[in-house]
Image 1 (cartoon, rainbow, N blue to C red):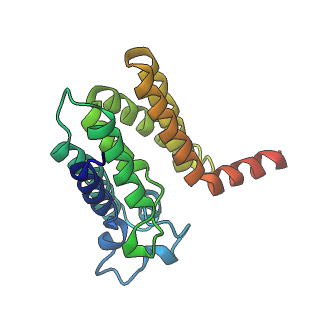
Image 2 (cartoon, one colour; image 1 turned 90 degrees about the vertical axis):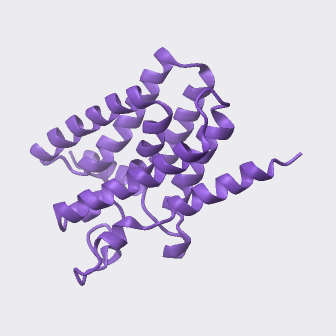
Length: 198
């Protein structure tokens, strides 16, 4: 039997995730973030233009992952139906936004918002790891520093989960990691191409 309430919650989560905060944050600047840098409507690309607008983008993208799960998920409930499923819906909304003709960002900040609701302690450790890797990468001018930090953080997060949580949660984290890596496939290709030169 189909759970109608679950479908509605997933659709609302998708709709929340689809709000293009990177585009909204650029309002008034006269710039369309989709025509700048990588063309990706996300935090890292906005950061190339303006740090303040990038922070607004980051806050919005985190919130649209956090809020739907916070509203619908009940602590102690089934983590699939009231956590991970809603989280994946929000991330898919970000990546395939109907407001952007079913294009979108790469889902890292939105997925971080989801994890901050489901696993706040582990997610906080993951965010600290991300900041460390991102700062070091930027300091040493590592190509694709944002993509490397994002994927490395999800690998780190999945590893942490393997120590503290059940196998189901680990499998979901690995699925999210693979999806986000696929969303970063062009960045990964660029990294491999540069590595081949050396």
